[in-house]
Image 1 (tube, helix red, strand yellow):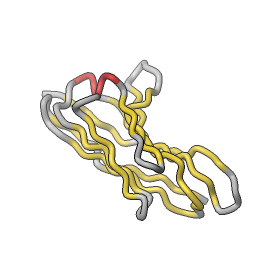
Image 2 (image 1 turned 180 degrees about the vertical axis):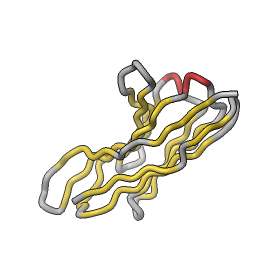
Image 3 (image 1 turned 135 degrees about the vertical axis):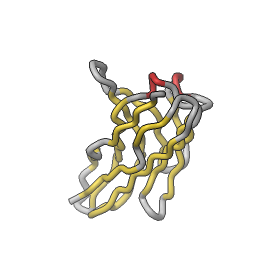
Length: 120
């Protein structure tokens, strides 16, 4: 069994900051990458940021320069620091972990999501 749990969402004013955290636990052999996706009402889920096992990062154009993803490999955690937040960043944010379990299976695991609302 693998669990992926997010924390840190909430309500923030435009221009403010939030930090999301995600932890993967369970029968994990290795993690290829971890990332954050978001889904706004009426829209498809989109990749926001991701980081690989060797530290290569990816950011959606809409968040470049404002969001920073970081990972603690020893703890199987990933954080997303979100600065200069805009109303269009409002969405449910989901953590994803692409990992191999101790039985050798490679799969994607998802958290349940955390709400981020940017509003005055």
